[in-house]
Image (cartoon, rainbow, N blue to C red; front, top):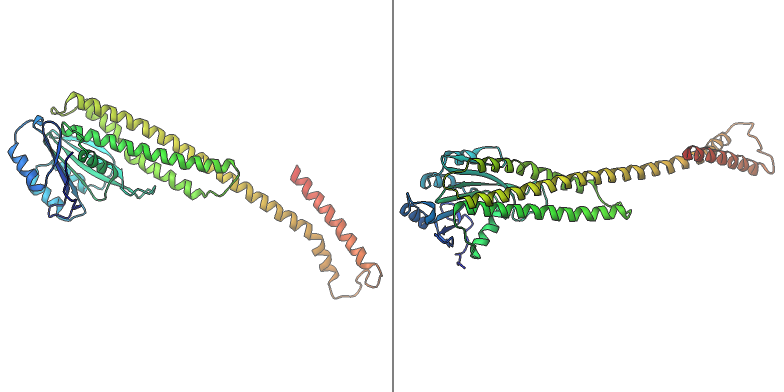
Amino acid sequence: MSTLPPATYGADFSGLIYGFQFGAQGQGIPVDTEQALRWLNAHEGTGPQEGFVWLHFNLSQAATAQWMQTHLQLSDLFYESLKDGSRSTRVELDDEMLVAVVNDVHYDFAFEPADISTLWLSVGPRLVVSARLQPLRSIDRLRDAVRRGTRLASSMALLVHLMHDQGDVLVSIVRNTTTRVDTIEDQLLAGRLNTKRAGLGSLRRLLVRLQRLLAPEPAALFRLLHKPPTWIGEEDLQDLRQSTEEFTVALSDMAALQERIKSLQEEVAAQVAEANNRSLFVLTIVTVLALPINIIAGLLGMNVGGIPWADHPHGFWIVVAIIVTFTAVAGWFALRKQRE
């Protein structure tokens, strides 16, 4: 297991967060920018069997892009993708070099649609460059795996490992979201209507955004599998095909979960509407029952002559009987209409 020096998180002059040099056996050794450039110059023109270098940069540092353009021989398509406003996931082949735009969740992901950011990759036979603006979960999992001694025999193996890690993160999100939805569904079945539709809506927006950003990826990978670069081995292609299938399954589960959340939203809306209807019915009944006494009290309260039973010894009870009679008739009529 290699020992990694203290992480600078892009604090050095180049914006490098960390770097590894992989030998022929696939063992990763931590390197800085000077060591990486010396290795690349010494192995210029050699094949991928000699190993490769992986450099991970922080794009939030202003000088990072300029340093990469000055010192690294990368595809123009890679630099264009850094400036491109499109964040859709894609893998493109440009002059025997792979340029990938991958969307991932932040390291401190809190189930918010805004906690999704982009990772840019340039993958060649001897050099892999990754760059991001925010700390991302999948790339950090890949770094931890390399620190633990995971062997990566080729640059394509590193990309495949990253895709597997991203698939695992996606599956974890789907699993945790399913757990939340199960809890909400249990509450609805138990009759405890304390679930806000806004919470379900937030989960659904998260899944929609993830699916929208990740859905193009299987198609892009399938195109790559049909026309791979000459330096990619058959074993790496097979692993890439497997990761594509895992993504397809995860996206399918995500689509099914979206439909389930939609059904729960409709159920919550139906229960809210039913509760409102019950409240409105109670209010209507109370209004109907109070209508006779209000009308009679208003008539008898007028300060004019001729008020009936004003001098009758039982006038009060006569008025009460009339009010009770009219109230009973109004209540019977309202309840009959409700049953119908």
